[in-house]
Image (cartoon, rainbow over all chains, first blue to last red; front, side, top):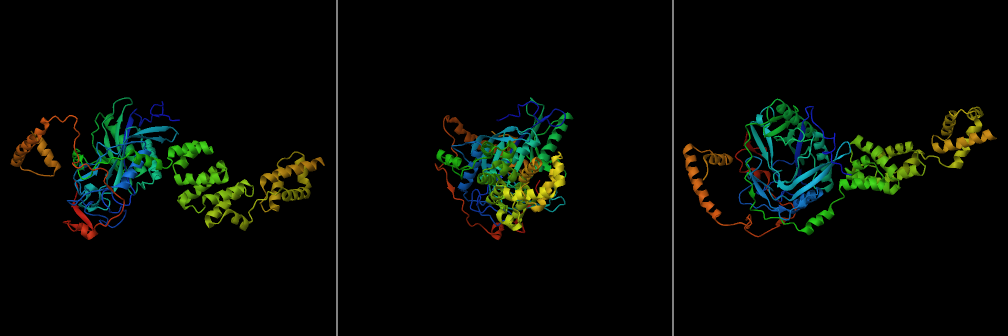
Length: 504
Length: 93
């Protein structure tokens, strides 16, 4: 049920009121969670003392030889396949030349005209349930740069700094760059795309994809135009290191471009930085040079020619991807599209749900619990489902007690809280607290008969047609049973007894 | 041949600064080098793949196994200025 929103009338988000349309392409960098760096055996680390995970290769000393990390190639191939790219039969690395203090070789080993993967796509589920197909231009492998800390000066920013400190621990970490087609038309869509990409990559197990720690980074190419007109001049928006900043940065840049054009000025093709403090974008105009990277093939790295068998082996090892899982959850368990989307985006939660649904044989009740009480409990405590003290089989046991009538839904919530707090199983808590619901007909019937007999006045009122009196009798039965009577059964038995008495 | 602007552009990319007379000399020297190499263009190479690697190797990879590197003191020993284990570089821009 693909729906192309770019063609669906009225759904094209026009930004601002001037009838302008934004055109956005994203460049995403994903840091791979390999044990070692792209071209040397130094460990990939985060937050370690500076320059303690470095060697002559990643420090760019002369005369050293980089060697490709096979795991990085495998991980990049996984990402490219998950994005439905074609994997190149012949791919090589290039040197991208530029001077910057975080790049000790004065070139970055990257890929240029023969990237690992090309021509993929990711269909993004938008808020309104429609799908936005976003083309993936390319997926390639490269190495990360070191880390600069700007010291001195008041602002802590590049332009106010007296000098900078360089730590090369991050230098040489494997990065996968993902470039999209300019298929994105609003900051909301960009955010939705990036979230879905993050979920996808996370499920592949190849990266932590954490924006705050920098293992997921996003730059954007942005332009605006009147619909149906050719693309306007684009700028490259950098420095958006959270989902919120991505949204705000794009919003600010789109507004800036529209204001320029409406004032009769033109957009200059340049790099624009988002300043999260002021919420504004700024340029480092005059401090940059035209990009002239003089790419040439990296002579120290022989080409990669991944065999078909290799690629197919990796394809076969991919987990069920979110889009496929969502469809299956709807088909197999009768979940709503929204429920399935929530679960499919969160693999451990979906695994948990499936385990509960299979153990109980009741997918509806299981979904209500997993997406309701369980998710509420986890969210309130900021826990992942993997850290949940109530395991899937423990929840299934609890739901089994509901299904057999031992616990009412309300009691089950209480038992769930107790299970989460104590780590005990449902049956133990029910026994300890004497919580079991009385569903034994004979036992309840005796109580009901007694209550009806002891209250001839209200019984008579009921027979006169005062339905509301039934509530009084239910209350009396609950009092007698310490609140443990099965409410539905009590209702049925009371009607039967009050009715019977009437006939008598 | 190479234009004066191209010489200046290449010098800027290489972060090299030249006096006026050096630029004049370099333009002429670089021009001669380029003409020399351009003789290759006389050959008909249509249908011949460009060579990026002289040795016919492929798929040379290593397992993802950590290997010892340098410690902080060793890593920074050649840095002209080092502060708290980091290389100090002039302000950027």
